[in-house]
Length: 179
View (tube, rainbow, N blue to C red):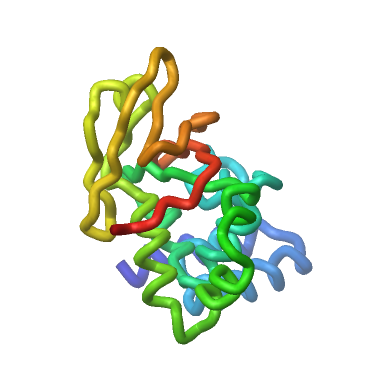
């Protein structure tokens, strides 16, 4: 395994310009310290984290994931169904509460809330219509309801859906709070 990793690393570095070699070498050490989320792969389909990073409407979710140090969870193979609150959803949370959750000493509480937004498995919009509830990564359940063509997670309407390489992102306009 070590030989294979060394060969892959050498192959990447040899095929690069001197500046790219320096960047790749720095990136390799950053990957070891940071984890899988630090790997830059422009050729693959975007994963859950890439989708959130690429959305101007999810910068608060990304900041929360970084504060909770769960970025690597969002790039794992999954599959994961993510209910992704928009910045407007986080704006509904009192600023003092949000600021408090982003403090290092409250990382466990923040993780619990974020894990409540993630369901193991890949549930498309149409599949959600057939569900009554979904088990979440924090051990809780999110109620799924349907009204006509609209689907709601704990009463928050799913306003958009994006398929990721490792799951599904369902955009919602509320922050879901565990019971």
